[in-house]
Length: 409
Image 1 (cartoon, one colour):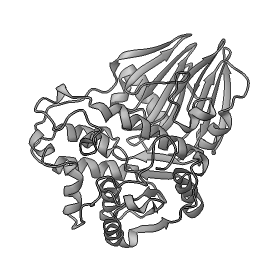
Image 2 (cartoon, rainbow, N blue to C red):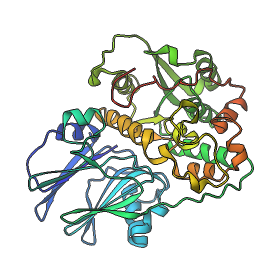
Image 3 (cartoon, rainbow, N blue to C red):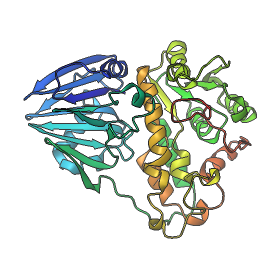
């Protein structure tokens, strides 16, 4: 996923050893006016490119991927630079991806992210030292996704800048159209398939459960003849729908390279959790660099309405009265994104989150309210039904039903 650290402290800190795990391809540190900028690269797209990249006296860093980058460029960071130089602070409107983009101009540091901030950035100070890092510099906060008063997680969909003090912009980087004027799910289907296919990568691994979200992704891969690995953990089989899982595997046929992790000898220490184990096996069994996950569907499409975590029961005719809903940016979105991203980082894996897709989210926002309210997660259920796949019986089925605190339930 790539990781970074920007600080005026020349010394190593606790989190450095973990940052290096997230960027195993190439590491680089430069010093600018007493500020030390470190980037650890996990090379996925284009040529191996040492960062930061200098252009016109400015320095640029990228964590994550631009899915719409110009392949004639050496790597996607150059696409981000070109868009920034062309459009200034509005350049994120022209980017499609999961990313954190940093611009350093003399003593000023600007932070830009995708709408959900899928790539983490934490800020804290110790005396006269300041630190911006991918991960919090504390062992407890590291394993609990950094939710403490000491480490400030920069918010998503805002421009943040630092010039001795941190400033969070008031305007949203991406604004959403809340008109509910599309009278079918076909538009959402197309946006979903595009979101899946742009995230596919050779030898990628899908975390597959018996739930709706990852099953729909697997079906899309198979329909489009994209070969992929798939891992299921069965540490908590009571939360998985085996019949649905079996039918999805059968449907995918030659395109799926499937393995099920079984056993209960995983203790509750974070380094030995099921969350960690499945990533360890992703590397050892498949040697993957990219993980595909189905998290985000409950948050974007449903706000957990059927799980007692929502602040509304049905979608209203005026979406502006509820948007952004509780879990669209925050709540479980924030917790689960950071939780899974952290564990993927430990194993040098890039995590790609299908449902945190700008075009897909916009397509769903524009669907007519009466269609939205037909049933919970109507889009994904219809996607499975069209392929004669049964709907999962268990409302809580999901990938291991794991806790965002870092411990399995």
